[in-house]
Length: 105
Length: 428
Image (cartoon, rainbow over the protein chains, first blue to last red):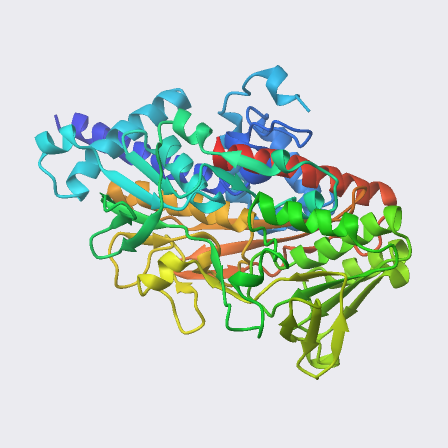
């Protein structure tokens, strides 16, 4: 029983951490959606972030930090590695949404 | 567990915890879920309503606004310059309705922070567990002698002031003499959309260059410096030359203090007089009437808020978001209003679920069009740490001063794309 209690306690800790991480990613990501669309689904030429591979996301952010881009080069330097990872995880887990709608003018 | 399942579970847990946070017995709470009422359906109010429905579907959200149509500040200058129709910047609350927000279109008599309720002009009241006030701005009509509500029809501020005001200013530009002069009066900080007056002057100059090449624009500014100033000045030099002139507050004593609406003449603080064929007065501003009437504003006329949730100290369960809030160093912009609304919605959802606030980061980004193919931007990222909101030093800033025409054209495209996405993010 004691073993089971420890397992449950450990699982709860993991779950609480996941809750915190999910909440953090979602809140951080809400700052992106004015340009990139609600829940990362853009209805314009600006890129959608929903469903983006996390490594692609991390690489793009790294390139922006090194000066790529017109506006992202001024935004990306504000995010540390942990926050960038939380954003990458959040967007990677989202549905891409309807393809046709995403690319509508 | 897939993320979507986890989120559903989280929402269920949040709902259950919310009941405890409100101190309601489970049975009663099941019959009556927590409620949020929002006064104001512009970018701030609408974004908050939509975000609350996305984050916590168990919440009942009611939004009250006096008008069913909302003409946006963003791109109002393109409308004035004849570059796009008013319909393209007119939003409704239909998307909010579809997302499950209860919409009430009625005149608001006032808000009652202590009771967390909205009082309608017809005597009805709508209350909730949380009251969010998003009243936008009002004008300080005492600031400029001879310019008040009675003069607005003849001399529109168009900030943005609804479809009729934009139509009037657009028509006045079309009808002005070929060698005429447009005078724009710009207030001191803070006011709604810091770069807006300079975008307006730019797009009017663009219109004149095409249709009335002998005509000119003069900005009379209460300030000595303004948003994106080096970018605007560079662009004005290359695109508009002598056609667009600017005079500053202390430098030139250009603050407008009096208006003669009949002759369309203005007088500045230094005593200089200027005659205009088209006169656009953007008056000094303060928080919308609802906030002032409820006693929430400071001496300057804005509402001090706690940064992590945009709550108002001393008024439990009351939040003020958007232009009315004092959120320095964030500017009063549609982006900032949408951002603050989502932060506020997250904070309300977390609070009702009994979870602590999170440290996070906020963004503001504002595009301006100098011409249809020439866009410039300013952005800032803010660290939210407890109750402190601070711009992050190694990020943010304006577009590169030296950039090729492709970059300027790309930013103009981004501006138009941003508009479509923020409208979707705010109004559904």
